[in-house]
Length: 311
Image 1 (tube, rainbow, N blue to C red):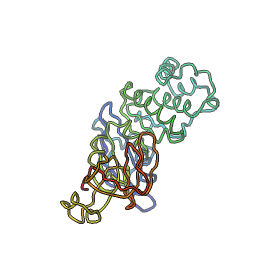
Image 2 (tube, helix red, strand yellow):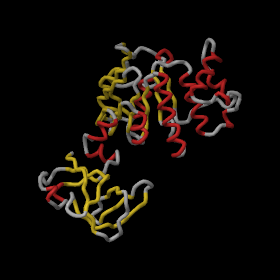
Image 3 (cartoon, rainbow, N blue to C red):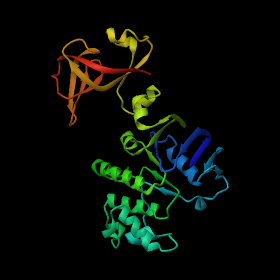
Image 4 (cartoon, one colour):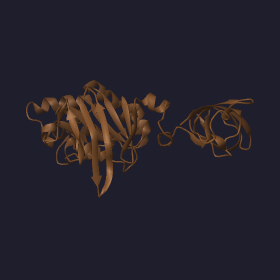
């Protein structure tokens, strides 16, 4: 439904977005993942019509939107700040801007986000999570043909963020509205996205389903950004398991490992052990780290069976 074709954006004389091409299908949620300053929010603003690009096209159902103003694109945009009106109550905030039968539609959206009993409450009396739900209901109320969410959970604590993330996933699936969700958090992207696009230095460096991106990172940068494990040169690791790789090859050693009595992929001396809830993060003296179900002793020599990939 949405097509972005070879989009380029210059900011302060420097390229911010370079040859960006993406698609979002009907009912699909695309997570745009990248570090701060990578151009994620600017891309959303260009799609919404709030900013222009130097070249490239934004299309909807094959139609170029270059001459379509923001208010006629019927795209919803939700920011981290929520931008609720403090002088209006919850129901009035959601109904704001709706033309006909607005209260019925507003109440439907409040029911969707589980905020029906709050409709007369002042938004200034709501918690951060409740404000997030109201902002989402307001974004959904006009029935946008595309919903764009820019770090909507970024201001919330981790426990609440995880709870609302699962609810947001269900709401988007029930609504059937295609969405673009901007985040710097890979866990959010893996949880919510049908598809992920990683943005780095203004380029899309990898796009695909969460399982594909996790299983086959396209570069060392992608693996490092996703926190997938240790990146080393094959020639820097001794042992028969690494002899088959060219010495200059970059290897990804995934952190989930299995301890064995002898042999295995590598041998190391334990330098540090951190408890992480359902596993222990074990760092070896050579700086490599692995996640084990049981804690070894600091100074102990251990043998590990590790999944290794060449990048």
